[in-house]
Length: 264
Ligand SMILES: [Zn+2]
View 1 (tube, helix red, strand yellow):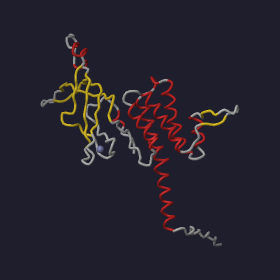
View 2 (cartoon, helix red, strand yellow):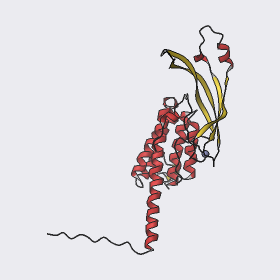
View 3 (tube, rainbow, N blue to C red):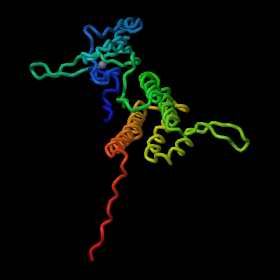
View 4 (cartoon, rainbow, N blue to C red):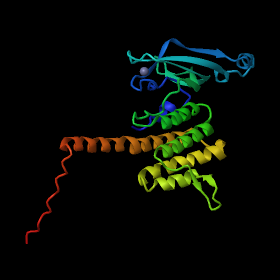
């Protein structure tokens, strides 16, 4: 399923329909009186300035959401900064009316939101790393990129791609992520191509976090989601189909196809 970009690109003037990170089925709705903003001291002081307008307002907010799935009812708390954006509307005479609307820039969610649904077939150690990347994405893009890279490392370890090797001097040394991905190609060339794309994001995260954009992170999440489906979900379905077929045949050998004889 494609990632809905606008759900992850603040500032928000309305709250997106985020998926509950616990049941991964219900959507989150704002609790009654769930959003509280408090204007900062410098912002309140700035109101005395002659050219002040609501653009200058800066607040810290706390928002509480509840999962709409009655069987879940999980509570998610979010905090961050809010400001005001100008809005335009028409009055009853058709004249343009200017207004102001509070917009929210979250920096933290507890528990962290999932930018995409982690498939149940995904091993825990990989899911944990990607959840950490989700948590960091709101406040620290470099850290989100590094966590995504760690998720790739965890996935390769789970797929039994070695982490270390013996070098010429008979010393045990670590294998670079790129070389691990190259080794994974013999097991799954398509999966390795997805992981290589995500790896570049990690490289940027380590060396020049300021060059990263939220869009880069969202691209990385999107490719990683695809990789998880390719590596775990599709493979799982194939194994289940083979197992079912074997059980159905109760150990009898697979009937061989008769080769067609060419007429003429
Ligand atoms: Zn829920």
